[in-house]
Amino acid sequence: MIQAHELTKQYGRKTAVNQLSFTVRPGTVTGFLGPNGAGKSTTMRMILGLDRPTAGHATVNGRAYAEHTAPLTEVGALLDARAVHPGRTARNHLLALAATTGISRRRVAEVIELTGLGPVADQRTRGFSLGMSQRLGIAAALLGDPATLILDEPVNGLDPEGILWIRNLLKSLAAQGRTVFVSSHLISEMALTAEQLIIVGRGRLIADVSVAELTRGTRHCVRVRSPQAAVLRAELAGPDVTVTSTEAGVLDVEGLDAQTIGQIARARGITLSELSTRTASLEEAFMELTHDDVEYRATVVAGSERNAR
Amino acid sequence: MTAMTVTPGTKLTPARVARSEWIKLRSVRSTVWALVVSAVTIAGTGLLLTTLTRGHLNASGHQHIDAVRISLFGMYLAQLTVGVLGVLLATGEYATGMIRATLSAAPRRLAVLGAKLGVYAVVALATCEVALFATFLAGQAVLGHAGVSLAAPGALRAVAGTGLYLTLVGLLGIALGFVIRNTAGAAAALVAVVLVIPEILGGALPADWAGRILPYLPSNAGQAIMNVTPTSDSMAPWPGLALFAAYTAAAVAVAALLLKRRDA
Image 1 (cartoon, rainbow over the protein chains, first blue to last red):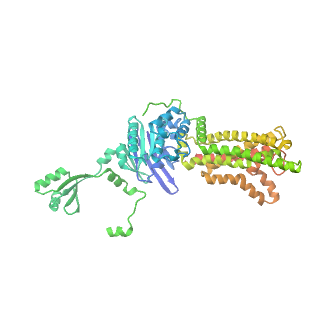
Image 2 (tube, one colour; image 1 turned 135 degrees about the horizontal axis):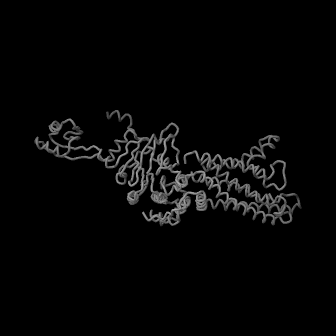
Image 3 (cartoon, rainbow over the protein chains, first blue to last red; image 1 turned 120 degrees about the horizontal axis):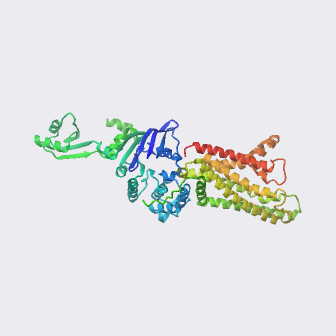
């Protein structure tokens, strides 16, 4: 269980994390989602006591991370897969970390096997691909068999096979009752892995929802194509119904489902050439939520924007 | 996941952090090489200079020489390799980002600093003392009748003390590395403190000022430990080394404070 209480981090006048409070519960994969620059990494570093919060505090299993007697067995973390000494072998890297807490050589061999690093374990990490580095980072996180895992963008740079491996690993770790907290800027990835989402933008909490809730909350819209679109539009009108049209003969209807629209059309003898339900994707839902909080947004050149209006 | 084989006795202790630092130190090729280079520098310079001196003595007859200092002369170069290795042990963590893994595994930061200092102190001291004693003995043999034994006044203190001095330079390097957190910057600072500043001030200060300042500069004070006979322009051997140790301790204190306060 990870708890953040009003976490705030300022760098000079810039606020990277702004009064962020949330709870990450055991037994599920919790996605920490937000655009680049939203403060995800900073928040994770504060949870691990690497960065000192300007205000607020974070606890892991009820205590500040640094106060645990055996931190590695409490929390396993992967912050930056490239953050290893390139001249050290993978095994020695893990042995050095394990030694701090008296974790056995056997356990080191075990996590090497578990992460599929066996063939390269005794090579210096200089030549590692990003994918192998990620596996090494995961191996380090698993060293202490911790009840809580904090992983910053673990699928970055992985090939499809590696992504699938991480996805299944995270799910199985959560199924064992562990707390799994994973950051990502890709909702499509989180939709497949996480059950719970903590969404941030510009350092603030935007939403703390389950993936199911987020999907349910998205707008459904029915697209209708008809040669008698204008007639149909009048027939559909009602207090909770919005009808928009982007091209002649096409209506986008919100507030009525496809079945109802079909029945209305049949009753009025209106011909339909298309009747389809469109669910806003999770990506659209996410974009909508974070729209105002994107740190770096491509802006349209001023001239063309004016023309478009 | 596989069955738990994490032993129940797992606990973070200062001794275990030291063990971790020892694994880190020996598992990177560059640190091992830097130690070998330090030892070779001490031996090579010592043997070269004693051999040249013997030739000179044979040509010009007996004259007064400082046989101890000549054989230990390699320390002037070795202080750079030992010191810069100290810098690297600290800045290497920051350059690679490894510091975040290190401090996640061992969040008690002062224990990490202490472990690094302690492990390197033992390793540097062992390396330097072996090289210095071997070079001293070989060098005195080369000098023949002009050579002295370890029993000669001040000889043992000079040889053993030079190893202590070099070790302190290494610890100063670690401290500067943690303060500056950048290899080039910290290495430059170390060279400035140990070599350049005494050299510049030595040339720039008026004579009456020089006598009051130069002996108390860090490296000048520390190197007083090599003086077999007292000289007017330097501190007494042990007080000099003690002053250098105090400078190093001050740098370590600043490093500890900053390590504790700053974000990793």
